[in-house]
Length: 204
Ligand SMILES: Cc1cc2nc3c(=O)[nH]c(=O)nc-3n(C[C@H](O)[C@H](O)[C@H](O)COP(=O)(O)O)c2cc1C
Image (cartoon, protein in one colour):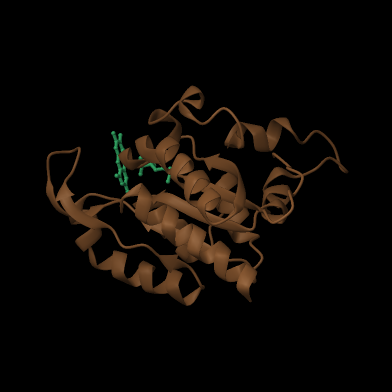
């Protein structure tokens, strides 16, 4: 986890991006850049950690991420970093480190897990252990038929009741060829939602 020294007039803020197995994870590197840039415009120095599910890793590569200020963690790191009692537990360390978590994209599988409290990988363990005083944002991304399935609205309502801000998906042609509601919101809009939350946490 990156840990910068605060410059005068510039607040350091730590963002955890959760990435899941939606094709929209191809936009994770772009999202990281937008959050850093929009944070900079608000006098925030942004540090980013990415907790990627194993499926998410099919859609972007470590080399595509900004070289500084971004650290990628995978499910393997959770167990390779823990050998014995007393060693740091990565999902707890990330929960303590982060000022905010944004899950972008939130796929249907992880949506179901988080809405129901399941925690079987790095990202869902961080979210299950989350400090409820810290903000959390989710950005669903799925096929239109998945989005329109009745279980989705039940789970979205459950996430909202748990204090998640939901950045709604948009309608467009998807990578699978289907057209309709379910594509992840644009990275610029997601970055704005994250930076707005960080700015308001400073104001209050
Ligand atoms: C090419 C491809 C694209 C996928 N895109 C999506 C998607 O946009 N949304 C979604 O909910 N699932 C999508 N899936 C299915 C998920 O990857 C799958 O449910 C996986 O188990 C999710 O695991 P995770 O939630 O741990 O990341 C896709 C699968 C493949 C093979």
